[in-house]
Length: 603
Image 1 (cartoon, one colour):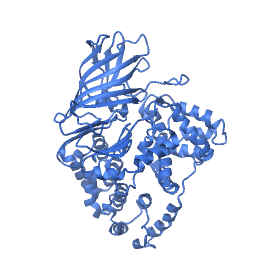
Image 2: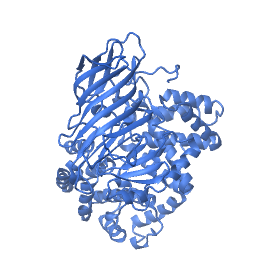
Image 3: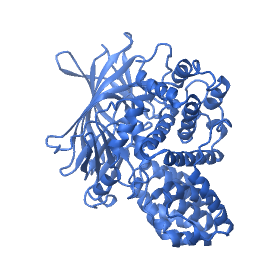
Image 4: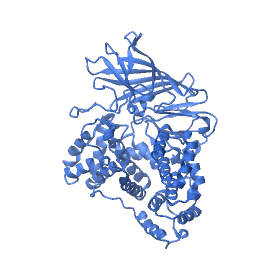
C-alpha cells in the first residue's frame, strides 16, 4: 500500500487507470503452438475496484488478438462483456477497453499472441544446442508483458499469479513461479506465484530443459548439453543468498532458481523472481563472471521486493542493485576483488559520459512523469546510482548505513515506490541524524545534475594500479608482450587492460597479444568482446574468423551492438559487417535485430 503522503501520478507508459481499479491476481491457461508461434487461451483477472463510480477497465495490450471478454457472477456463470481496442501507439501498444458495468470481481479474456510478439522469441531447432527441438522464451521488461498477456502493464501494480501451460511433449515449461523440479507436464504444466509481482516480472520459457539442484533452495535449469557447465559455474549460489541475507534480511521468495537461456537472450540477466533468466555468455568455465548472478540475486531485494513505481525511477531498481552486488561480491570473495570490480565499473561509467547527452546523465529528471523521452539514460543509472549509495555508505560508515538500507527494504517490501519516497526516507533516517554525510546541494547534484559529482569517492585497487604501469610501458613499446606479467591476472584485470588500450594499441601489438594469450578464442566473453572491439578499431583483421563465430553465436546486446558499431565506422569493415548481420540476424532476439538494424540504417 502506498504512503498517503506520496500521491503517485499514473504511469504514462500504461493505459491502465489503476487509481480506479487494480488487478490483484492473474491466472493464465495457455497453449504453446510452435508452428504458429503463438500462445493462445485465456487470462482471468481478479479485480479490486477503488472508485465506486468507475464503469470501465482499460488494460495494456500489444498485437494481441482478443476474441471474447467475459465476467463471472457470484454463482460462477460467465457472461460476455463488450470490449474494443484503442488506437495503436508505437511505444504503448493498444488499450483494451472493457465495459464493466457492475464492477465485476473477475473477468476472463480469450486471446492469442501474434507470431511477432515483442516479448517472445521462438527459436528453431537449429538455434538450440542440440539442434533437435525448438525453444521459446520471454523478456517482458520494460513494456512487453502486454504483448503476451492483457494486463495492467506497469510496475505500479503488483499481483499474484497462477498458470496452466500446454506444450509439446518432450519440452519442459518453466516460469517465474514455483517450478517443480520433478514435474512431468502431464495434464499441463502448473505454476503458482504466491508473492505479488509487477507485470514486467512475468516470464516463461519452453524447450529442452534439464535441471540440477545447487542447494536446498536453489537449482539451475539449462539445455541438457549445457547443464553440467552451468551447475559448475553457479556452485556458489547458496553462499551468495546467505551473504545477501546477512546484509539485508531474509530472502522472501522461497526459492532462487536460475535458467540459462540460448545465446540469443539479448541481455545479461533478468531478475524474474524464483527463476532468474541468464545469458550463457557468463559461463566462462572458471566462475570469473559470477558477479552477474550476484546482481540478479540482489534484485530479490532491490527491484523485485521494492520496485520503481514507473520507469522514470529506474535507478531505484538498478542503482540499488548494482550497489548491493558489490557488497555481496566483497562478502564472498574479499575486499580486493570487490574493489577491482568497482574501479572498473566506475571507470567505464566515466567513459560512457562522452556518449550520453547531458540532459540524460541525471539519476532522474525533474518535472512530472509524462514521457519516456524525459527519462535518464537507462545504462548510466546502474553505476551512478550505486556510486551515490556508496558515497553515503563511506561517509556514514557501514554501522549506520547498513541498517538504514535494510530498513528501506523492510519498510517498503512488496511496494512500488518513487524517488521522492526514497529521498524522504533518506532525509528522515540518515541525513537529519547525520547532517555531515551529505548537504542538500550535493544531494540535488547527485539526483538531478549531469555527470558524476567531483566529490564522489573513487575506488582505487592496488592491483589495478600496478597494472597501469605495465600497460603504459607496453603501449610505449618499452615492455615486450612476452614480459607482461599476466600469470595471476583475473578477468577484471584483463578487462581493464583491454579497456585502456582500446583505440591506442597497434595492429602488431594486438597480434602479439593474441598469439601470446589466445584472447580471440578465450571462453571469457567479457574479455573476448573487449579484445574484438580493440582489434576492430586498430584494423587487426586477423580476428575476423573468431569474430564472425562470436557474432553468429552471441546475441547479447551489450556485446553485439558495440562491435557492429565499431565495424561500421570503417569502409573496409562495413560490407563485411553487413554480410555477417545478414546471416546472424535470424539468430538474434527481436530487440537485438531492431537495435543493430538501426545502426545499419544510420550508417
